[in-house]
Amino acid sequence: MSDQQPKGLEGVAAAGRAARGLPPVHLWNPPHCGDIDIVIRADGVWMHEGTPIGRAELVRLFSTVLRKDEDGIYLVTPVEKLKITVEDSPFLAVRVDREGEDLVFTTDVGDQVRAGPENGLRVELGEGDEPRPYLHVRRGLEARLTRPVFYELVEMSVVRGRERGVWSGGVWFPLGDAA
Image 1 (cartoon, rainbow, N blue to C red):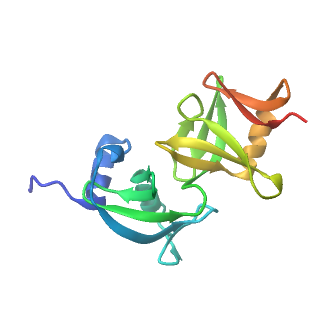
Image 2: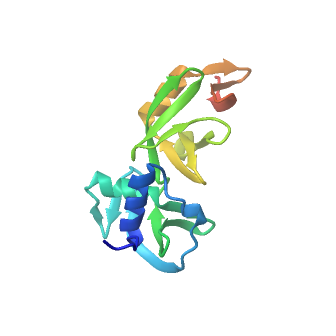
Image 3: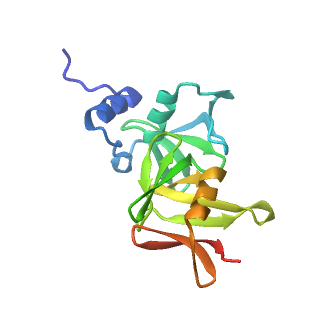
């Protein structure tokens, strides 16, 4: 049996299985190896060379090695750094649950994120003033809330002054004008 650890994505997968956590991509500083033809579409579909990536396990693996740098979003391993294209946000929030006073969101890749001081909610206005809500997932990476999740959030909301919003983790998150 070899003492060498597997390199690249195989090594990341093995480390992830062992630790059951996210790889420390923020600590890795590999050289930039160029761009890779991976696109995360606005609807959450991951594409490689124009074809959807059909294996959910592979998408999940890739999602664990995403890193946002000043100049873009990258797939990062201890030995490689490849820039990808993200049309909107790398994740979608597909579920929200109330746990006590907190809101816990589930993303399309299985992450669970508790909204609070470190994982804020924000709403910006898109075309035609349509709300575009986002949740901070980790280290600058965000999930856009799907429409059903946002509607559910609005149903949970309360009015405070002139704002409609929600509380989570002891933080007030405005969703929009109360009117």
